[in-house]
Length: 285
Image (cartoon, rainbow, N blue to C red):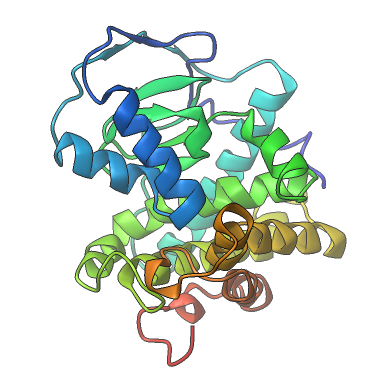
C-alpha cells in the first residue's frame, strides 16, 4: 500500500503513555462487560459504555491531556495520513452533493484505557467511534491483534479499520445512526447490523476514490483490496462467535456475518457510490 507521501492534517490527539486519573466511573466490571460484548456478541463498545454510563453523562474519571498535532512515529503518521485521506474523500463527496463535511473532532491514539464521551474505553475493545464526542479511538496494539488473532495482516487491513470507524462519523453527520436506533440493536436484520455494514461499504467507497482524490499519494492495488476484504471477513459476527463460544447465534448479531461484511466492502470499492451503500433499504444484506 502506498501512503508515505500522503498529506497529514494533524487531527490527532495522542494519549499514548497516559491514562485516566482516578478510579471512579465505569469501573472494571463495566469494562469487562464491554469487552465481552465486543468479542463474544460483536456489540459496539461505544454502545455498551453509553448504556452503562448513561447517554450523554460526563464520566467520573478525568483524562490526562494528550498531545494534539501530527505524530512523528511511523504508526502515528500512518493513522494521520489515512484519516486525512478519508476526510479528503468524504469532503469531495459531500461537496458534490451540496453538503459540507466536518472531520471528526480527533483521532485519539491511546493505550490501556482512556476516557471517552461514551464512558471509559479500554484497549481490549478494539477501535471504535464515539458519537457523543465525535472522536475515533484507536489503541494501535490492535494492529497486532488484527494480524495474529484475526489473520488480517498488512497496512491495507489497518486502513480498512480506520476508514470503517470514520464511516461511522459520516453516518453521524448524515443522521443515519438515528435511523439505525429505531430498527433495534441486535439481530440479523437489526439497525446495528445495517449501520455496521454501511460503514463497511463506506470504507470501500474510500478505497475506490482515495488514489484519485490524493493524486496517488495514498493508493491501494488489487492485493490491498483483498487485504481489506480479509480484515472485514475476520470480524464478522459468525466468525467471532464461532471462535469465542463455538456456536453462532444470529439473534445476537450486531455487525453482520463475514460474508456480509466482505460483500458490502466490495460494493463500496467497486461502485465508489455512497448511494449503493443504503443497507437500510436493501432487500438483501
